[in-house]
Every structure is written in C-alpha cells, then in structure tokens.
Image (cartoon, rainbow, N blue to C red; front, side):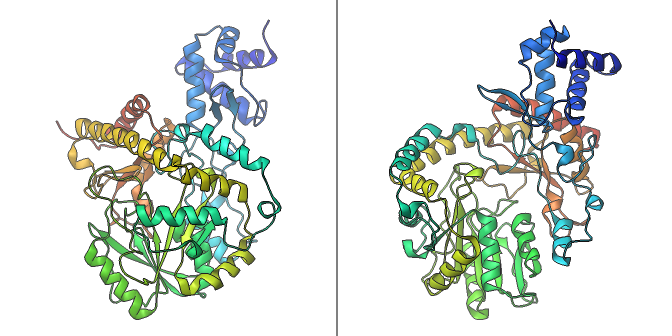
Amino acid sequence: MRSLLGDHLLQRLQQQTEGALYHRVFRCLRDTITDGVLAPKTRLPASRDLAKELQVSRNTILNAYEQLGAQGYVQAMTGSGTWVAETLPENYLNVPRNEAAPKNKSSFDLKHLSQRGTAFLQHAASSPYQWGAFVPGIPDVTEFPHAEFSKIQMRLSRQADVSGLIYTSDGGCLELKQALAEYLRVARSVRCDADQILITEGIHQAVDFISRALCDLNDHVWIEDPGYWGARNILRMNGLTIHPMAVDHEGMIPDPDAPIPKLISLTPSHQYPLGSHLSLARRRQILELARIHKSWIIEDDYDSEFRFSGQPFPSLQGLEENTPVIYMGTFSKTIYPSLRIGYMVVPKNLVAALRVISAELYRGGNMLTQRTLAEFIQEGHYAAHIRRMRLLYAKRRAFLIELIERYLGPDFVHEYSHEAGLHLVLKLPDYADDVSITQLALVRGVKVRPLSQYFDQPSQQSTRGLLLGFACVAEKEMLMAFSVLRQCLKEHDIFPQK
C-alpha cells in the first residue's frame, strides 16, 4: 500500500516528462519540499521504501537524494536517514530556486538599515553551502574523536560547580587558557602566559572586538588583497576605512603612500586565500612600521596546524619581544566550526582593559565546553587528532593536485599554493569568468568559490581562479566532482589543448 507521499510523487512524476528519471524524481522531491508538502526537519522515506512505492530502482532514488543534498535541500545523517533541511536554499538571502548565482542584493529590504548595515549587505559573501566538494575551509568533521570528547564532557557535567554555570569576567576558562598558553608556546613559538589569553567565539568575534575596542570611526586599516572577506566585512561594518594591500609570494606588500593604519590585518603563516607566507624581511618591515606609527597588527594564524612538508613557520607575534601584535586563533579548522571557540593573545599592557570590555560586550560563558576542551588538549587528544588529520589532508591534497595536473596541467595550480592549508587555488586565464563558472558548477552539485570575489573591489584586473577545498572530500567523491568541474571549464572554453 502506497503512502500519501508516494501518491503525491507519482502524480508529480506524470507531469515531469523531460530528462533522466533520477532528475525527474529529484525535481518532484525538490518541488514537494519547496511547496511545503514536506516541512523542514521532516524525515524522508528510506530509499529502498520510496523506490518500491514509485516502482523505480533504488539507485534512482539514491541519485535524487544525493542531488537534493548537494543543492542544500536535505541533510543526510549517518544512522538517522535523510531529513529536509531546516533552512532551504530559496530562503537563504532569497536566492531563486533555479539560480546558483550569488545572492541577489536587490532583493534586500534596505530602507530600515543604517548606512553601515546597507554597505555590509552589499559586500556579504557567506554561503549556505558548507559541506561537500569543494567547499573551502571546512575540515572533515566526521573524523573528529567525538566519543573521547563526549566522555570528558559527561564527566565534567556531573561535577559542575557554581563558577562554571554563571557569567564570567575572566576572559574565559582558566584551565583552557593555561592549556592554550602551553600549546602555543611549543607549537607556534608564541610569547605569552595564560593571563594574556582571552577566549572568544571565533575569529569573527575577535576581529569585531578589537576593531571596537582599539579603533574609532574612520580609522584606517590595512588588509591583504585578496584577503578573507569575513574579517574585511566586520572592519567595514564597524566604520573603519579599508586600504587593500597587494599580495605577492612574500605576503602583504606595504604601500608607503597609504594613510597611517590603526590596524594591520594579516594571515602571515598561510595567506588567505592565495597560500603564500609572510617572509622574514616583510615581517620585520611591518613590525617596524607598526612600532613607528603606533599601529596594532592582527595576526590571524590561519591554517597554521596543517603544513604538509618542511618546517612550520613560527608566529609573527613571537618573532621579537613585546611586539604590537594581537594573535588570533580558532578551533574551527582543527576540531569543527560549530564549536565556536577561538582565542586572542593580547599584549600585556592591554590585558586588563580588554578583559573588562570583553566581559561587557559579550558576557563570557560556555564554561563546560571550554573545560572539556582544556582537558582534551591536556590529555594529548588534540595533538594526536591534528597529527592524524594532517596525514589524511596531505593525502587528499596530493590526490587533488594529481587530478589537476593530469587533466588540466601544472599551470592551473596557483604558484603560491604551498603545501599547507585546507584548500587549493585553481588558477584560471585572465579572460575567465570565475563567478559564472562557480554558478554553473553549483547547479551541478559542485561547490567552489571564485577567487576574484576575494579582492576588495573585484575588477577586470583581479586574478581569476577557483578555491577548491579538499579537507572534507573523500577521494571517490573528489574524482566525481572534479569531472563535473572539468566539464564546466570546458563549457566556458577553458580547457588545455593536448
């Protein structure tokens, strides 16, 4: 006996006459979801059961489910089946169903927003797609030792005391700050003690905090160009004046004619997104500039844990005594993004004031998770996890490079893509429209990001390319996704002549 959903889908299938069967089933399911027949967080039937109801092969249903997942309509949870996504792609910034283009900025209702809020939306670059090939900057969260972490958390939750259940004004859990201080001194050559560390909810909050606490409206900020849009947009939202600085194989190129900066924002160990590292000469030059102009350097130590060959580059903060550097890190790439725990190491003369301002702005909490993380680090689980993931990511990175070089050629790997990080930059010819290629790939279930959009003001002079994240992509999936991407490039007349 068929279910109501089975009857509904059979009726829709009779109206769908074009395309492969799996794609017709996909369209029927998608329309059933977007029309509200299947509400958010509803579990879909098992593939075997639905195949029997619709009298099609199970592979047809599996392919349709996979396409739904690739486009963000459903989420598959191991052992729990497939569920309708809580937020559909159509509801995310009003992206039309059949378009994979970046958000339609004209669809925003701007009349109630401030000028800063309006400007922020015009530059917003977040994506609803945060998993799968080739989303950059996402670790393989399925490989995290959740069982070990949960054991620690459960034990601590049974021992909870009052201090762990109320607001804190100490800048975070003392045990976590102590564990971090020891780890950073050894792993990143950071000069600090636990008192200098403030726990945050990640890099975004840290940049927001520093730009509020140390800057006034219209203060000047130097940023890397191309650079991380998230930090750039937060600085802009807080009313600061952005000055993009070009990047080469030695990192940021300071412009002597630019206005004196209050902040200099850097990713020195692994420049985001190109992959170069800040040379020793540039490090000393920028430190000297900061001291002369009484500027503060924001050091986002992005991806520093994942260097796959050679010696790791030490932190800029630890290069000299008493540097004017605010060092920032996060566990989003080493553990998982939704943990929302990051940290700042601030100069000693700022500690007391910034601790008070942080407590007033953000009301510290989440102490149980912080204590759990502290023990996870102290017991050696964190270092062991990083070592294991470094090997896995190195293997996936090598496989992706092999695909690029075999099917496109070595010139397509950006020359700054050193052996580090969780993504590669696929370099494209100057005439390429990397935004259009991104849109076409997304329609076909492959999620890449256009390099040109990482420039402060994208123009015809911006380098063209695609960011390909490999960390959360198994090799089998990577091969299939790369074949799709290769076809997209071919359709845009970007294909090597062999």
